[in-house]
Image 1 (cartoon, rainbow, N blue to C red):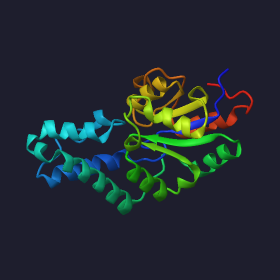
Image 2 (image 1 turned 45 degrees about the vertical axis):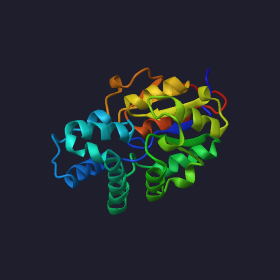
Image 3 (image 1 turned 30 degrees about the vertical axis):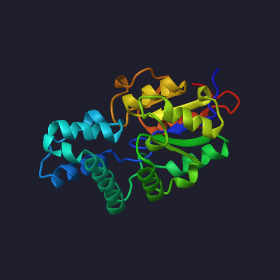
Image 4 (image 1 turned 60 degrees about the vertical axis):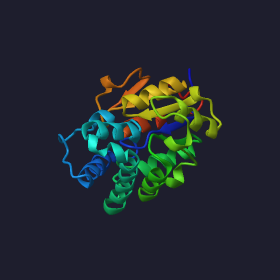
Length: 226
């Protein structure tokens, strides 16, 4: 039986409902360069991946942006923070604060591991009132490789002082689930962004983050098992 002594959360779509903000930020980037989105969900295949890969897609679709590829990325990140400040942050599920407090009371470690950069992540956590729950936050700009590489989750486990095999990772993207598996963690898939069957190599699967947290909270402290 594998103990679950910590939960490592992806941020977008798992703790906060921010995927629409990413799309809006990219659409603002396109507008800045005089372009319109090629389709309503033109960047869905970049969900969960580093922004640099979405930037590369923009450059492929609109070659005139290639000369300003670095600016494309900076603009997207600034637009994203602007949108968060303009609209606030919607939590991915009701009762998030109560459940996180209950996890802390059980002594379960909590961390965020995300392909976002630190400034974007802290902006969102602060706006959602979640920062106090997460003593450890690991972002793309603090590791060598982003998801689907294991670096983010390995570093989060290291900072918590808990072996990866005793960490459950909550993920809703294929890249994130692959990263969790490669890190040696318990992989808990959430159907928040894509169907569960599109998430690879799951140990557990739930329709929502709330269901997954209620499952963890129901486990006996001496035999938390995936």
